Length: 420
Image (cartoon, rainbow, N blue to C red):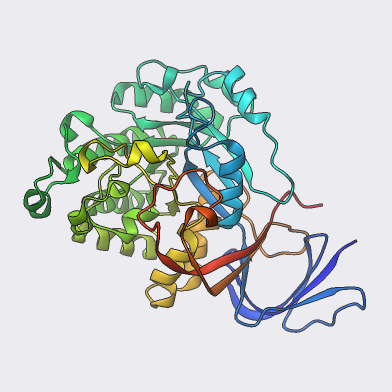
């Protein structure tokens, strides 16, 4: 039996409203006791955690992996290693593979990958529609019985009649449903959010209505069906207002924003960095500020990483032809901590809630916590300085706007796995 005592760490747990300095004693990784001060048994290893932070493992609502079909981008093993390095004890993977995960046999193949007990637990969304193409309903009951976490195409689902049928069909199942509200007809060939900045940069524009029209339709479908749904990839100020009003009316909808939409806006496209080519595109400054405030106040329930790996050749192209997305599982937490906690914009509990307990609740899971009997926690060093370079990354991909940057903050350890 391995016994460890972590002395005088900053203990953060949104499930208990805890943010205080104390001691944490574990046996074989399982939390045994938490108190302001504890005495270590003679055989226990003692860690001086002055200046370090311990909190529940992080939970990612949706990310993407290359396996199967594009293992040169990312494998389940490399993604798991990246998530573990970033402090994520659970990651929900989208079915956006080649082929899409839309039947029980393909899902079973994904589920055969078994992470080690001290690494990230992978969960799998299954496609709502055949081939995740938004045309015909997939075999949803079969997929649920096979172990699907929930249902989400990972692509825009634009046929509102089909959305309504899906919500009605899934109403008795009480299964997580994720929908990306985006009208690709309205978006057209746009690659930057419509406004003066897109005009100055000479980039084809994508109007906010490509998101808000689809989101308003989704909210109405949720209202009439009564089936809870999650609106993913929210990116505009007007969408925040629509979500706020829906919650005032007690419509059962939750929402998330990706971490990069909190850190950047369309002004950051001046260097045409292909790693900032995202879908939906980065918002204008007023959108970014509205998203930040909505996360702080809880209108937006969760921050998603939406880890989207691509190989060097795919992303090292002009901005306008680059595939959309960037990696983030190893980078998001320390960068968000530095940006919003160190700068004093959010309480630490807010960030941990939006990256841990709230995503878990959106997935109908019991959130990780710092409680006796739990073994899903991380140790974070907010002062550790390191450089984002290929040799320092566990992911096979390097498509990040932070490549080459010096970061402050590093997860020292992630403990995960079911309670013993």
